[in-house]
Length: 170
Ligand SMILES: [Zn+2]
Image (cartoon, rainbow, N blue to C red):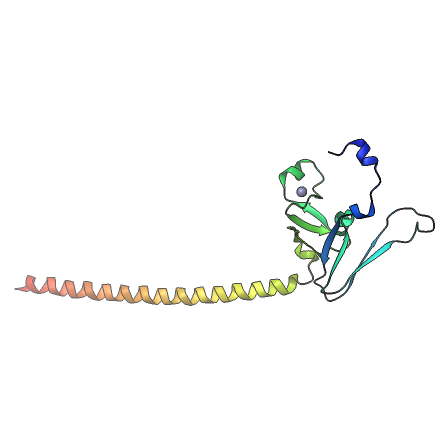
């Protein structure tokens, strides 16, 4: 914990921490944030632009604005809000730019916010269908094999019955 005196110390520019964000989408991503009132600046946001397929460092103070993360960690859930600012595993459920990828982040993007989700689902469905088809084919072969064994057993049983029947006629 910082002491009160330390908290009153102004932040030096070199103390600013940054987070690297990657933009996996095909379009640039604008992040508009308000640093607060300044003469003439009250209504002008500061704009960060993350290029398509590129990276940009943005002050970490905006992490929880860029990604709103619903935390899966019990220690965070217990404190109530359900939204994490501590980089636990969880789900990105919103924010200014949920599609950006935060370097080192463990949270997964909510599928409803993922523009590639339909594509991923399609692929998963194709894989599942192929797996079902393969299993069906295997089952068909297993059934055929087990039917063949049954027929063999029936045949053996018939032969055995014949063999038993013969001595009885004597
Ligand atoms: Zn958390």
